[in-house]
Length: 447
Image (cartoon, rainbow, N blue to C red; front, side, top):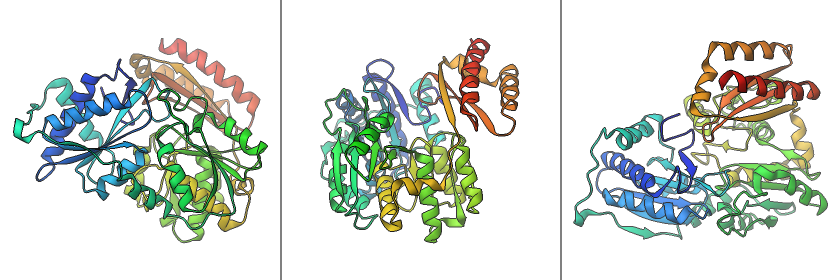
């Protein structure tokens, strides 16, 4: 993790860690890099989610980019994957998404995409950091006559809507509840589902700037589960603030997480001859049940570090067709260059229709191992101590207590001041006890 960038762009509390000055500085540096890689005057598209601070940061990003000579097109409220898709569709030199994804409204963030629709590489982000923090390259402001223009292009999102809706066939006959988390999908989901003839009811589509992800969406899936069960829906799907992830619930209100979604799609793609090399890409946080599923179905999976950028790296390197995270980021390179919650939702629902199975039946292809996770508040210094020999030794010793039927993963969050402890095993009572013991001991070791 860099000094400004985390695992998914720049993120922090708006007007504190992520203020106007930083947004301008980063955008100027990004603009310098984009200009150096573009013939002629570059154009950068900018989208945002529904957070109160979104328009403030949108203006700052546009000012930074235009001040170094980049034209800017403001897309308005759109999902993150819409920016990734529209970069190439509109022939832009780069894209920016202003969002803090699943975080509460007080947070915001900035993600950058290159001209190919992929997020910036580690090397490009490091170059931006060196320009901003070290003055490694001069920031040359554009002469008055060459300042970039800032325009609005709210109609462009229709091309994204058409693309996503076109990935599936007719979805009529399935009763669906869709939770938009008062986030970016409120601007696209209704149109997408309408184009598929889906019988959909939409929840949490009234953003006010402060209610994004608040007791709704993929982070609060229990509410959707209750609604689906009580109102007789066949399935429910929920997005996060920028709609790059999707979780579901079956007709009984029970969770369909990203691992189950990967298993469902991997089996379907394999049967359709679309799972290249019969492999898929999870992360180290995926449930052991997913790895068992792969073995049983003679598939191979290659787990990566946590973060959709690492999943994508492996997807491209291994020429794989499917990858994702338990949290609901699912990447399917055939359709998109990044995770797309609305795409995942449509493919899940279409899988139900094609198979003729209920959602609860589909998810039975994977047996879920009990898994618990706790977070420890941590400074960067505390996170660094996870590499100490004493800490590693302690984790190894505790892992041995699971006797080969589970595992312990301890990792620093790339987006929040937290250390995450995950324990997995067959015995729920045993791992509940162990995770609390580990949290207390690790606090003492790293403090």
